[in-house]
Image (cartoon, rainbow, N blue to C red; front, side, top):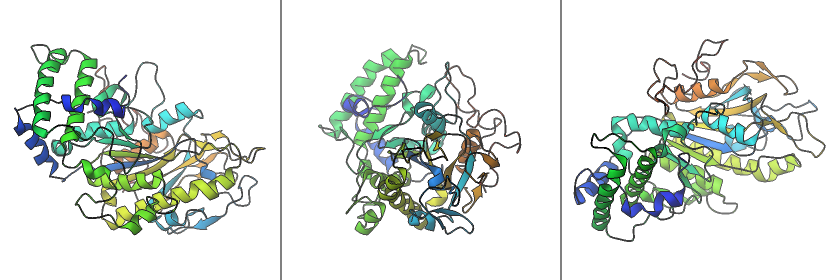
Length: 449
């Protein structure tokens, strides 16, 4: 119930819902004044989500000369000694700012379970609904005294489809879904003037407040509280002066976005696609102060005809979007404040099946990270000559998540990250309660400066 914010529900009653601390137009003026200040301390995360299970042996950890190697050839990148597929030249140029973890064992080869563990860093629990990384970052941003300055735009935005929701953190930290990047989210524009919107919000607050609080002002009904929080978020976006951040015509400073840049992303021109648009939108959103943006590229469940599908469809789309995103962030000076993570449900089998495809394989595969405090140009861990097992620095999902949080400036050790608590009041440790047995660390030190 509290996992994912449906966009229609999120916006449908926007004109009727918000918490009004002061009467009338002073509330609206306060929101707009805060929105004008884009200064932000917390780093942001962009997750490039490859739904269906990407074949990392054909992208990041190629095995030329092995029967499992496939039809594509490896090519050098900008990082000495690191090769990736020949079909991603733009991404290869950015490897001074990217690193590969080649030895991940994520344990789950089922799509739903794999999606859950890769978005939360946790295996499913029968008693606790864990939040996605985007929801955790939204929660952390809310703890920052500066957070009110970005309250008019959702802190966690999913472009192209939401994977995992906010779990026990509740609807306040749920992802806001944008299905068509470049188009305004549905129901954002108010049909009435601002002053009428505020008056309606005040009436709603008086009605809703009685459901949510006793006389002692403590919340007593989780469902009512979640309902109220969704309405508050909706009104903030409706009255925001920054809601144009969702278009792909202008930068957040009002200047026109260069047409050539949009074509580089794959956001305009021949072959334009929603992944390219989503990557450009993600860059705009993190500049506007959004804590986490997830951009989806599906179609990776390739049980047959994998090599043609990769070369002609999936990899060209990925290369333009991801490669241009990394270049654009670096050129605009945003990469130091933005962590980018490429991942999916699981990897695919080293063995090529009888249909010319690869099947599900979580035992030895790769994820790619960059930006923030991540060191670029590193290949961490290794698989054997056939890609069937991790032979060097076997990596667990908790190691990956500890590294992501560390790269964002959040210390993942239990002593310092107990600010997040579950619905029973217990501390929630973002990268687990125990360090890696071999390294005695909660993150991969070779990757985080």
